[in-house]
Image 1 (cartoon, rainbow, N blue to C red):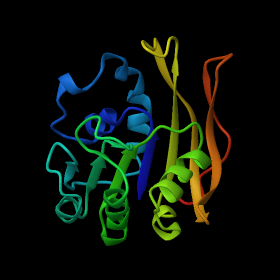
Image 2: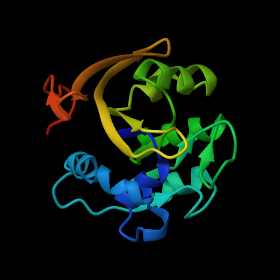
Image 3: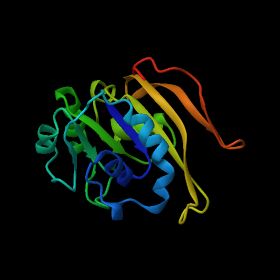
Amino acid sequence: MLLVLLGPGVLLHALLSPRARAVELPLYAAAFWVVGFWWLRLLPAGWIGPVLALGYDGDDVADLVTKARGGYLVVPEVAPGPYAPGYVWGAPVRRAFAGIARGTALATALHAPDPESAFAILCQENKLPDADAARLAIVVYMRALGPQTAPTRRVVETVHEILGVTKGRPDARLLFRWHERGDRFEQVAKPERLAV
């Protein structure tokens, strides 16, 4: 299983890690708790597995994939520069995704406005093979409201289930969407790939 949150990578570490450091979690992240608990329901009952974060628990992707087997590897962000610990591009992205086939779940973040753009970053810019990209299960798109330099609120705008990938293009199925006018979240379809 793979979860991609298109938004702040630090949230992934805070939500998944049993030893989350409060100072790493921005104040506005409290708004994300609903999403965090929704997708954590995807974990099997009684799940106890390692949760390791690239840049926090080590910098060798291959080593962390092995150590996280049966649990999660958190890659804070797929980005072309080393802006913060755990940001990766190119070969490390491919190694992290390849780990899914060997029993390590992956959670990561990247900046893109929709699933198609996210997969273009993964498959075209990072040369991720379709087979590895197709292991992605969920894409959550988060939107910042207010000024770009100081957002007042972040919302989950859409949740897509990924049914497959062909030539770098996802077969993305909209599951949930946020309605700004009424500030409500609506289920559009039931997941096919996930049992929730």
